[in-house]
Length: 105
Image 1: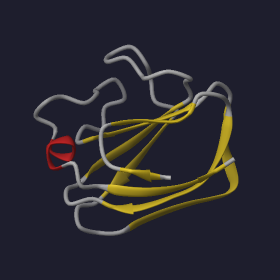
Image 2: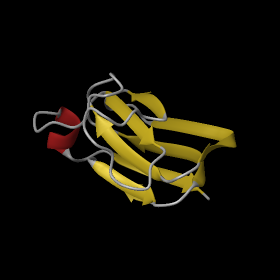
Image 3: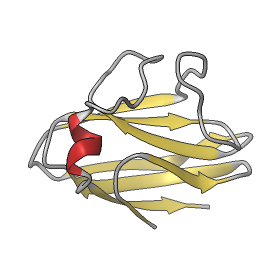
């Protein structure tokens, strides 16, 4: 699955993530939500937050897998705080060129 910034609904039911690879033109964070629908600003807490560096490939491998119960939603943001979400000034969203590949079941 290829992902290009913003909010991505990877799966609307529980699943297991085995890896995420990609590259972003700017530093930021990938927030994974255990949720069947799009996360809500300021209320939904990420299941996991992964840092990414600008212009540096990233490769997160989860040998045992990261299991979710209700779904897999992903948000790219410049902000690490768990309840911060995408804003119109978020550089990751404005550039809209980050690409990531997921391996999940």
